[in-house]
Image (cartoon, rainbow, N blue to C red):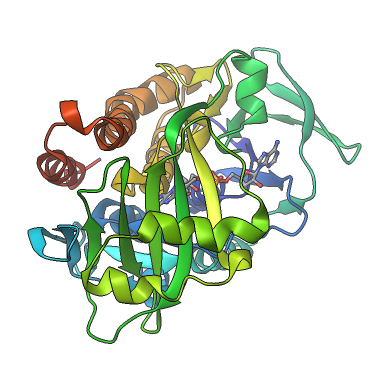
Length: 373
Ligand SMILES: Cc1cc2nc3c(=O)[nH]c(=O)nc-3n(C[C@H](O)[C@H](O)[C@H](O)COP(=O)(O)OP(=O)(O)OC[C@H]3O[C@@H](n4cnc5c(N)ncnc54)[C@H](O)[C@@H]3O)c2cc1C
């Protein structure tokens, strides 16, 4: 019994690879098309929590992810001068697995691509859809390599600037939230086992997170009025300005931010779609359905949880409409909570006069997300 036997996945990122693995594990035939011929990702860090580790474990890649990353003790809120304000220890959500995990984006990509290759899932690189037509009993797709195919289900996993979403909901586009994020990988001090968030500077916050035994990354999230473009050669100086004024370990690690070519700067743009994220036989998951800001470090977790739940519902029901509705019932409120709370945290950073309590909100969401999906 399965609501779909032949599934096309558009996008081979976190959500696409996770849902490919999840559906394949349940005996559903899948194909992936990925626009990027190199299939490469930025060398930046990614912070994930217990619910992400649990979802990866459900897909059979939890051990590989933990081995590729650094299981740290949890998140700490720090004052600007480096004093601990609050500790949020990472609680495990899956037996034998850690709670909080840092890993590099390429390491996560390797864990997922290795599994996809091991399972023999077909992935066509440098290829995307040219058009698709949902005829009610199937989806006819033409591809940019001149081929075509017919599928029971098309899953849009093509990220924040989704082309699949644009076909179905042309008016839904990511909006600039007012902040940008600066990231840089630096050596990890041997004794550092927490991810620290330094708050108190108007407009944003800074922090770091261990990624491996040797490496951690520094991030600075700040208000960037007017969504400016920065000349590449100025990026290290600009990031240094955001890191000014902080003490503790941050003051030491900030000295390593020297090479503009190694700074990754991204304006924050979010797009949270209303329910439903599907029309007929086409559904969106991951950032294409609900891209948020990185304030809660939950984007990748939401993408993998979407994948686990969609695979369960599609493989476990014989009616596709019922499977997609059940998927929405299990996913919508949770992903919306993460998205709206992430944006709220950024708003509070930009408007401290009306700010709530970021420690309380972050802790509340962490407890909520540890609940089973
Ligand atoms: C600055 C920043 C910091 C972040 N930090 C964190 C963090 O610390 N922790 C965390 O959990 N999350 C974080 N995230 C979010 C996380 O990276 C995303 O939520 C996650 O990658 C979403 O997975 P996805 O598969 O939906 O999209 P992506 O990972 O973006 O994958 C989309 C894939 O689709 C491909 N694609 C695009 N268009 C097409 C097309 N037309 N046809 C075919 N393929 C296509 C792309 O090449 C890509 O491979 C951060 C995001 C940003 C921007």
